[in-house]
Length: 272
Length: 282
Image (cartoon, rainbow over all chains, first blue to last red; front, side, top):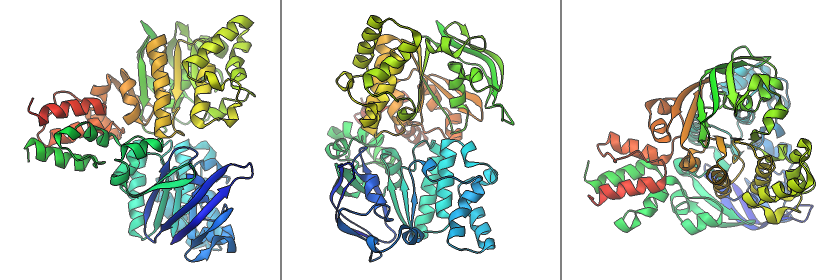
């Protein structure tokens, strides 16, 4: 569980990135933190694994104040996948990259091998086992970064903009293994402004603007609130936009998913 | 008028085991707004590098077949020569900007071409105006937001008055409203100035409304090439896993269930109009 209590954060250059954030993320939650560029999303999640320490207020991870423990200690529990994989990758081969943290955590060689193979397979990277991460495309490097974190099996997984530069199929895979990880009772936090991706996952959405949380609730409640969404520099999902334009015909305005849309439209058009 | 034409274009990087672009034959007309899409690693960026001569002039490797851009045979022209006709805008504007002010960044390319001072001023003003960043001219690019930086990058290419502009996932790092504004700038360049646009993009929900031509690549080859409606609605697009607009997806799902809209929609306006007809039995 992550408890964020009145957290403020000011960068050394004076930019006030968080201005009093309260949020509780329970075990097994799936949360999408959304909002415009510069809203403070990444700053907030960097507090979850202790990379940043709040200027004021406190963060508790399973009851432990992140101030009282090292990032290395928190890392076992909280895995963080950066937006830009190049901030994370440095080994000569993909395999070494994934094994790196496992070695640091002191796992035995046979366990490391098994975990590495598992992670490579999960992310469709087996063919690149011996390849340098820097020979891979941006999307592939992103998957290597993700594999290296998932390999040590952290309880909480934070993904910062996981869909950037990913094509539709990879997003679909990402969605599938978020579902898998949730089935394993992991807590998932994603930072994103990919509205269509969120519409397909339907997580809890936390909306931020200018260093504060302005909304917190179900995706189909928040993404369909036009004023709120626009204020956060997002656009409603395309299905929602279609339904909004037909609201005078009595169509509900809180639809974000195509399959939900199909059910309603088939009902209304009298075809079953 | 045909502006870009490739015939059986095949390219292999110096270190490549197999071609990154294979047997590509396409035609792009002057004034086209082309979306180039396909799974990552399919060869989109490589193809774009052929358009402005970075391939083969900079990257080396083996190029076969023919490619003509704005009347130039790419294999026989220098990057310098082609840069006047074809501008390339990257995913991350930080890789492209480096001057101390927006104005200087936009003027930089022109200085390299030996454009006169008066003309330079005129072109910089015009490019800043067209991209809507005139009020940012004195600012330092690194202090700007991602969306503003991307406009600076676009302005600095635009100032060279290219006939073709290639945008390689220019909005990946931007939030949806920021992305939409960039697409609108690109749309303006295409509509008002007649610049031929090639946009590499995965976010088809946002970008599709602007295009008149869609090219889909998969495993180094062009697998679909045509009008947006026809491409997005094709069986092949679904099989490759192209992220077609949700409006088009809704059309397909309804059709499978016996409700047929009179046309294939590619954006929310079209879809809502077509649905209105069905729902009001019009």
